[in-house]
Image 1 (cartoon, rainbow, N blue to C red):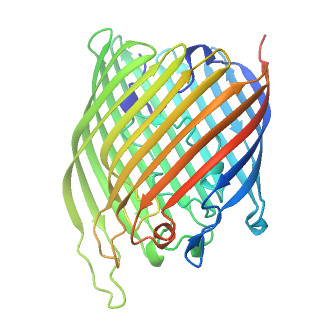
Image 2: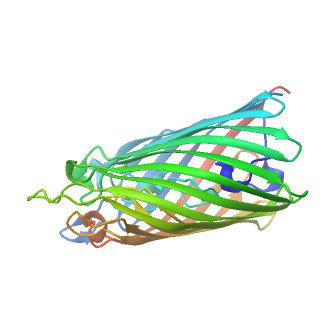
Length: 414
């Protein structure tokens, strides 16, 4: 048995079925040139455009043994601006995903990803083939300050145990952190953190149908104006997955979610706000298809989530989609998009920075040779958060890019 999408913690794959590889060492370098109409933020209220050059060395290891599967990747980045050279930066991107079989029926998984950047768009594959998760627990990355230095870290540790032919249980712990080293760059946004845990029972009622129940706990913390806003949630959800093949599945989940929020006192009179307690519905649906020349993933969720930089936890409605298509033998295209409505729980702080984000991107990739490829694309970001000064000043970002990639791959164990 495989853990269904609502509780697996994994994103739907965006690779084509015949692109999947295991046991390789891969290295390369990507050179990207981009024009951005909001490259360094507003000056005298007007967005400043610029052309940037981005160099990214990459290295990745994917190794599979009878009991272990390990995927490690590291991609530093170096950005140079044509006019605003004082915004030149160095990025860091690292990720690890380990799966280990303690026995034929017990599996452990641990993963962690870390990003340090001053440019949201300079992340590997940002918006080109975005990750789509059908899970009940994901970090809220929908509030975006494109030009601010930021550190993001997300990790999880989990275990599954198939104790009968058609029955499985599992548990997962997660954490995430968002930190802005220079708060003056992100007026209206704040550091945040989240910790959580979940337990599930999954029952395979037929060859293609799986039914289960999961309990989820979250502790969501934001640090506005030096204070602490904390929300704790408890949810019990039923989930269902229909998977007629290993590369096609549809999942649904839903149930009640209880939230308990404690906000800091309102300055300057230190007015104490009583705790806010509420029951809320938590629902979601997702779909994934991985074909020989097409991949498609779509998800929707309505849940209480971390604020992702806002003053506190939020009621989050989000839709994410990703489509890839092999057009010719050497040419492929991708389209991705996301919409998120963030409604902050409570409004004890001055102003309520609820709002929404819309992200869209399209790109074409031409495989010039076995190791060389050329990609061109366009992405657009629109956000409306009237109380977040850094976003309200320049709510729109348009970016056109072209990149040249050279990659070397060596099989392992053969």
